[in-house]
Length: 68
Image 1 (cartoon, helix red, strand yellow):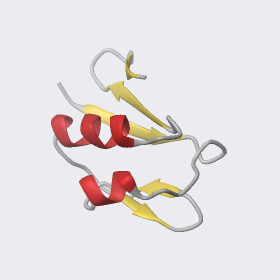
Image 2 (cartoon, rainbow, N blue to C red; image 1 turned 90 degrees about the vertical axis):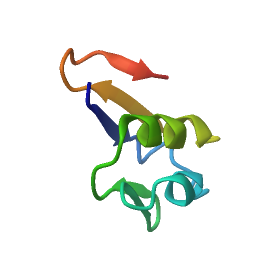
Image 3 (cartoon, rainbow, N blue to C red; image 1 turned 45 degrees about the horizontal axis):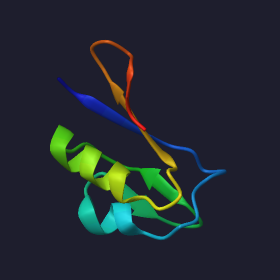
Image 4 (cartoon, rainbow, N blue to C red; image 1 turned 180 degrees about the horizontal axis):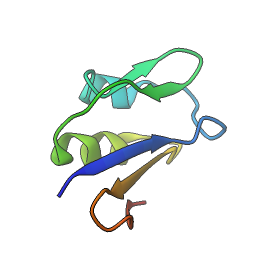
């Protein structure tokens, strides 16, 4: 499996929890943005850490939403 994170910039409150957990995947400016790749575990953990639920995780093989 391979997860793809997508940030809903209109929902992001720029808390930065995702960057703390996955700095190779996310960066923080006015909002979070995806800058790279990471392990499925790391991406899912970062998404679950977002207090605004602004990160959607997609399974690249099936196209289905894994989280939220």
